[in-house]
Length: 267
Image (cartoon, rainbow, N blue to C red; front, side):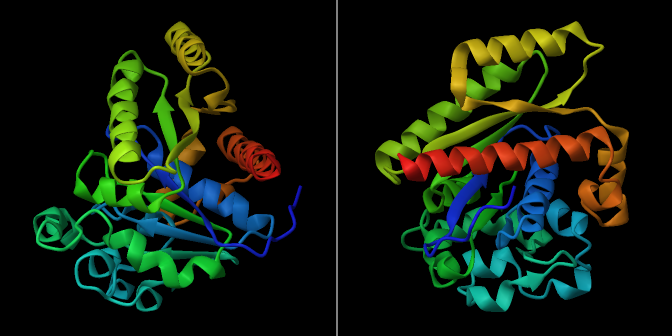
């Protein structure tokens, strides 16, 4: 269901997990696509040097002459880094391999943790949501995302070591909240790569819900071949095959997220 646009600044969500291969970028791309489909204006910021979110939205590398690296380190104007995607209402700040060395350059800036927050301010009135796809590590680039964000969205793979990694991430979020960004909150935990044939997936899901309760989304993202295929075609799964189980799950996730946001603003 489409929600009415509000005359307010963008809600910034950092999509974070220090472990790779958990569906973080897939979640950022498809959640952004689903939000755009219901009329929300979305900016996706690709902060991963691999540039998978950029590739997944079909952004040619030749069009990445101004990237999130230039936004963070070279003080490029944010407007010069934004590239429209093929999806109405969804723009992206692409990434390039130059980001891999950004941490060494960030430490020389003042303040090094607030570069992204300051850089995004001019476009805050232009979007409903800004989704920040973070690198798979808890480095200074990820800290920049957390300092800029209002909240953190955590994709969590249904696997044995999930809770151990989540504990470390939640500790980092707490430190950022105490020292750099007192408004930062955990918007939600998204269970990904769920395999109903695997009893371990059920056990991990139960354990995460037991520890974090209502912070865990009801929507679960299943393992799905069509979702895995979509990035190689430069398209979100919702465009590649909107009928597949993975795409339908991301549509449900967007609806659930919007309901949470509506409840938050009402409260």
